[in-house]
Image (cartoon, rainbow, N blue to C red; front, side):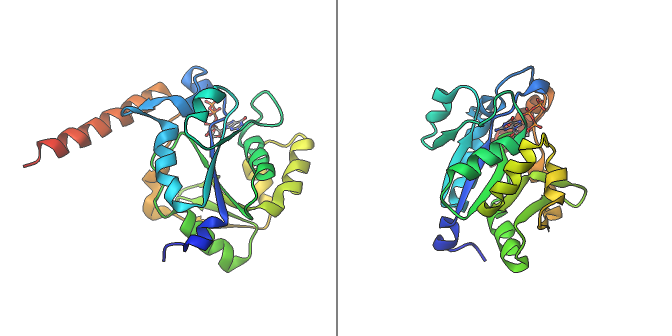
Length: 211
Ligand SMILES: Nc1nc2c(ncn2[C@@H]2O[C@H](COP(=O)(O)OP(=O)(O)OP(=O)(O)O)[C@@H](O)[C@H]2O)c(=O)[nH]1
């Protein structure tokens, strides 16, 4: 059953767009074009109806991200320390009890992402619910209680950066999204972007040529 308005209001989504994009030649992936819109615009469109509010985690091009009309949060530590740094900054910023993290480089996340993570978090009483696609964990797709912030800050302060390692230390649950595995296909390289763009163009031209 879809989340109710009060349930959605308890969740802030953070779109993580603060990475170095090394495999993309150092480009800011969140602003990359796919089918005429930035990757961040695709993710924002999908996630906005699922939650109460959205913020963007970005470390460059603040003015361009500001045009999305939501809060833009930079990491507290410079130098691209990884997704956990963005999640920590977002947890410190929000005033909702739950944070939904998701990356900017996965343009079509499932339309029931927040709902399924929230239902399992509530049912298990865990502090974190993480996506599993049937093959592997996708730790950047997670619903976290705000109360995990001190533990995350301590992990980062100790030099920890790995999501899998930190999640393993927390009371977590995994949510099976095997039925939606392709929704978690992401874009890391120019070739992956071009392939997906070509597929989308095919879909559009097939649709428009239909009788
Ligand atoms: N806020 C923040 N987000 C990050 C950071 N590093 C990665 N991310 C985000 O986490 C998600 C997964 O990142 P990766 O694809 O592993 O890293 P990337 O920097 O984007 O790309 P590569 O340098 O090619 O690995 C993406 O949405 C990134 O924008 C960081 O240091 N800070």
